[in-house]
Image (tube, rainbow, N blue to C red):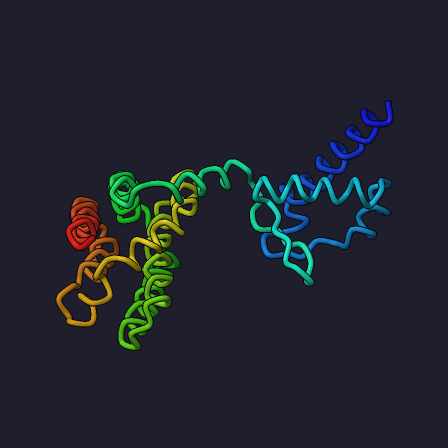
Length: 222
């Protein structure tokens, strides 16, 4: 009977901790309270809290840093599962999926973009240009992902934006592996600037075509 009771307490602690995470009380990057504080707040033993945290670490919602504490790394277990699947995916499979997402995002962004969206796109492009001038590959990849996420945001389709956010790390790794920055440094690639101009001018067909050109170039260079 004690085993059943202990399991129930652990399950209860898991539910409480998961609720704090998914509700945003503890956002991504936040350090959660110590075992002793959680045990006191939840009315369970420190052992029950420890087991609950271990379960959520395995689920990908938390990560423990030795000597530092435990931090929130995700708020949605389905998002974690999706990211793990992408980690195992072939690069060409990711590009195939992006063809669908980028085409729709570019077309909708050209149709729905607002002045604030164009500001975000220009900012991302500026960071991308500064990064390739500094030959900073990490910053270049970050800015490139920011640019494409900004296009998804400009589509004003929250489902599309969530899907793109879920793929952002895989997109970043693709940019790091191809020769996108090298082409930009040599001045032989203006496709991202062209994509911005198509979105700014409301040219939905042109934006979609350029978005596909960018992915075709990436596929060729990988």
